[in-house]
Image (cartoon, rainbow, N blue to C red; front, side):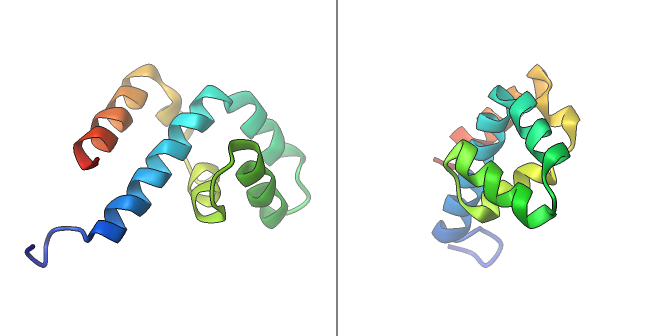
Length: 86
């Protein structure tokens, strides 16, 4: 493997985040409500992690996600990227 290629660990971490994005897209209103109603970013991260059954790192990535990533075209792009890694 060349130094430019991501390691297996990096690929697995990226797949976990892509999966979390896709889960969040399906439950976007709940994710938005959690973010709006949480007392702190830490509370929001923990609640999103529980809602989606993902890691805290993946929940952080979801909370930092631009809402445009929820469009159908972007979801397809996310799936293609995920499938190219796995």
